[in-house]
Image (cartoon, rainbow, N blue to C red; front, side, top):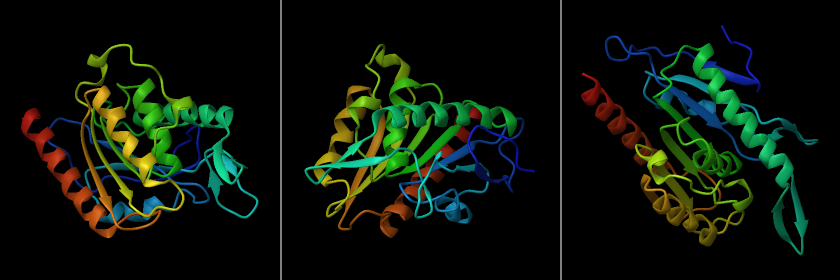
Length: 228
């Protein structure tokens, strides 16, 4: 049964048990501009079945359909972020993740966040401000929005975080030069990450998704080995 959370969402329960005596992990999905909670949720069947899967709908309804985490404006043909809306969205998403852990009885130390585009941008904001909220990040086609990033207080807080990031080399929405900036952001925090580029536009590469699935399965197996 779907529960009440701060953000509207789709939910799929785990169909496989996790290791004995441990709660199942939680996989959170955050879609991109103009999409909805069903967009990334369609990938659920392709991912390991141990997860509680929660796919959130962004809070801003768009007039042409779909939703956004924050508005985009235009200034000399360059996109810019509505910072107050983006900060609100970061907090709303972080709060919703914490609530989902409790309400679906997931393991709070085994939370995963898959974000695309705006969802990926918010993921980096959450990683910077709430390093103990999510353990594994999969930010796809995102970049570092400085207004969403909390300064580093203690590098030790980021110990144990792992990330898998991808970007298209011909992305017309978020230039590849912006995408590459995520590497420095994660290095500064000591995050264990993989970053991969693909010859594609603004989307999810089939090859990248296959590699991400492998990365997820390997991380789950690592955890199982440590927790036995």
